[in-house]
Image (cartoon, rainbow, N blue to C red):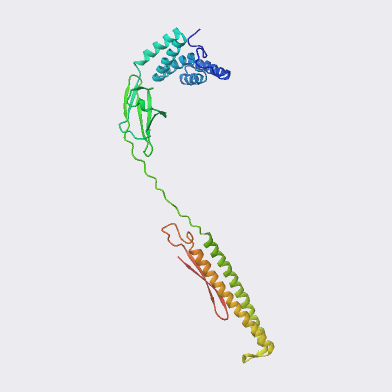
Length: 317
């Protein structure tokens, strides 16, 4: 049996039939891609095949693929593991090849030593997103060549990050993690939210009452003038207060309507002024965002006298 052409030989666990079938297809695809010199794609197929069915034959092919790709540390550890598994399975030829390839790579491995002189609680070091356990700190560990990113994080500290380039052969990178700076303390602000709805609603209601009062004032004012005009033919031309009984009755009705009109104007004026004050003093109404500089203000002020009335509109900037 060939050392390289079986995906399912000498497996450690027994996967399901579906997993074994998928692993075999991926293995065959990987072998095809190797012949086409599509090394990176082939390595991905072998890695997925091995995840589904952890077979020694697949691991040998994966190690060879990684070595072709220049990932020397990944190739070396797979050669070492495949040699141990082959020995356990009594597969001497595979063991011998895997041991020979691992030994040839070991002397060329590039290594990285991460030192942490300023340890803090909860400190984590990650290399390209993978956790570097504390047991690895300060020890030269085999790493694949290329640009590697080291990130250090800890609660309450600013993340520290550094990218370093690892040479292709026998490089020895020494990396010291800087002391992590304290993260800025988030200021907790308490926002008091005022419910201004009652005041605003009260102002609107007061404006409504005021409008009704003004309307009544105008209506009864008109009635008062009409009754007064009707009484004139029943009164002496040189003295309007000397009238017949019918004229006197009309004059009394005119006076009554006049009083109601005056009361309407007073109530209406007070309602409108109160409504404007309530609305204008409601927080968030009538002020701008720039230093609470007042916005335009408009006032409606009622005016009235015994014979007439009206509204005065006044604006201020």
